[in-house]
Length: 166
Image 1: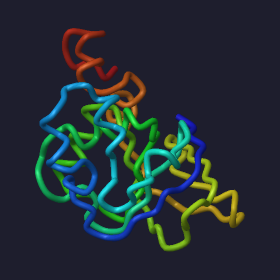
Image 2: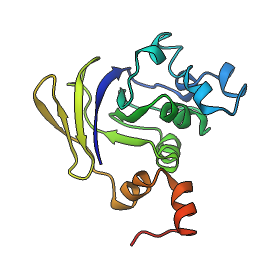
Image 3: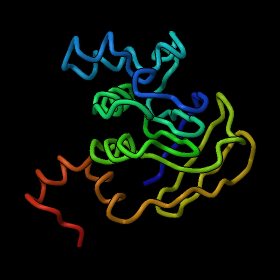
Image 4: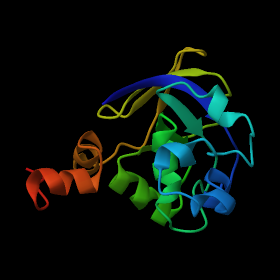
């Protein structure tokens, strides 16, 4: 999987209520509608700035807080291809893989707002085109890459009716 896009950068401890506020997440089951409110408490204009394929970049402990799947689903439906951070909350990490949202762990200190990135998940390489530097990323296990390539765990089960990682 190769990904290309622009950076929208946030800091440490971005919790799931910052990703999608509680005042919105129970009003609708329409994820496209919910996506309009992604990150609005940290950047009220976020949704209008996003182009298809962009990245959210954070610091440590991204996705802490509640374990609801609305957070990764809203990010996906905002056309964000991946979230890049130094570390992720465990349940958020699993929810993202299950819903088909790529997560990339790496040092994000050399990534800034607006930078253009290229990412090769199989090779474990993030290339910051803006700065001309490569950043090593924590490679995802093959099983997770397969789940992501199929659109998440539910889509994998629809396709195979069981776990199929051959």
